[in-house]
Amino acid sequence: MKNKGILRGIFGKPLHPLAQAYVASIPVDSRLYRHDITGSIAHAKMLAKQKIISEEEADLIVNGLISIGEEIEHGKFNSKPELEDIHMNVEARLFEKIGDVAGKLHTARSRNDQVALDLRLFLKEAILETIDRLKNFQKILITFAEANQKVIIPGYTHLQRAQPVLLAHHILAYFEMFQRDKERFRDCLKRTDVLPLGSGALAGVPYSVDRDFLARELGFAVVSANSMDAVSDRDFVIEYEAAAAIAMMHLSRLAEELILWSSAEFGFIEIDEAFTTGSSIMPQKKNPDLAELVRGKTGRVYGNLMAILTVMKALPLTYNRDLQEDKAGLFSTVDILGTSLEVFTEMVRTLKVNSGRTYEAAGTGHTLATDLADYLVKKGVSFRQAYDIVGEIVKYAISKGKSLSELSLEEYYRFSPTFAEDVYSITVETSVVARKVYGGTAPEQVSEALSRAKRLLESEVEGRSD
Ligand code: ARG
Image (cartoon, rainbow, N blue to C red; front, top):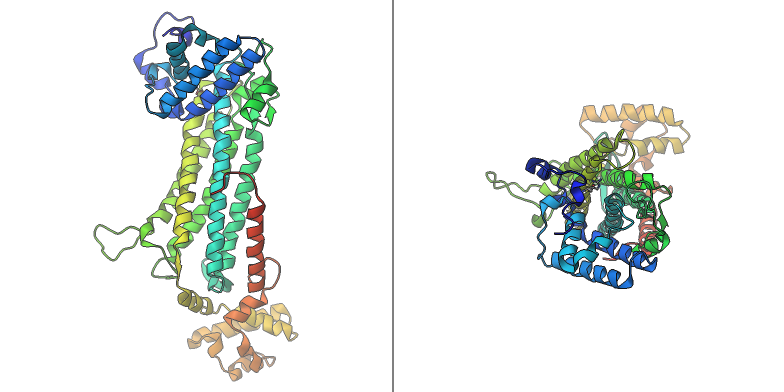
């Protein structure tokens, strides 16, 4: 290998084996090989275009890089930890393949702008994939909501039955959350879409490089405006991890609800056997492990965010080796969010709803108390007064072990003369239908919301389609 001395600079001594193993990042950053090769190919082409190297040299380099890419793809590449990272491993292999001309590739470049470039290339792809997965998940939520459009469940506050709502309305709440998540990722994409190459080690490069050409070749929207910033900041990584932490938080809330809803206590839904596990000792168990793991893995995603924030905290400009720690957490977060969304998409696809049970639950626990108060308000009673009257009625009903609909008109009269026979027309259905406000749970609003949601997804263009 011809470039043996590169990483040792002016030092005579080889790196201590323990130190060598400690500083190596290849086990993590080998995942960037495709981006590294893509970046290097563009760089070599640019060097030739600017006559910094000859066309023939660039051709040799480009073809060499392409064949290294194929070697890696086919598992025929042996990386060496002593070469530290994927970037040095690819370069060393290029020397083996094309000889000394390989030494020209690193002209007008440093590993500092190279690693920043590779990471940005990687993350741009990952963001589009994340958005795509979020979108697929939203589609399934819509399908599930549509298939259960008439199902009524109790809506909760404080995990106490509060008011009846449509299950579809509840599910569409998650659609909104994931919609905002996508917006956060799109926003993060804008700031990731910046070409750092040309920044060199930190001060820029003393060659007449064409950064706009590089940006076009590599598909970047803009070039970085400050070389020191470009090699040392990782705020785009933090943004991704923050957006991912929020998305996982959303997913964990749904996970928790699925866990609760599938318990015998609720009995609202049944998770398909393909997504539940049994117990080694209790044969009756059907455990919602997938949902539990999504809930659990959210912790790791939060941890990854804390880790990168801490790595970056108070780090002086420009590149510091600490930055090598940016990738492990990012990759972990990309993978956890991606697989969690994939798993949930399939799990929701096969969810079964026990609508008899949800309907019954929606109507018990005095969930129509607010409707009773609204009934009095419509007959001229002030809301606060109505609230007090209904409070007394509920207390009375509880003491008698009755539901509101089981009270006689005579009993109602005792609390207010305003009550009439039509008080019995208050039902779970009328409660839901009454909430016709934009954003409310009335069936007409929910079906409008479903159409809006579908139109929204259809109008979105970026990302791969499923
Ligand atoms: N393996 C390192 C990383 O991923 C590359 C280091 C480049 N720069 C340096 N001055 N050592 O961050």
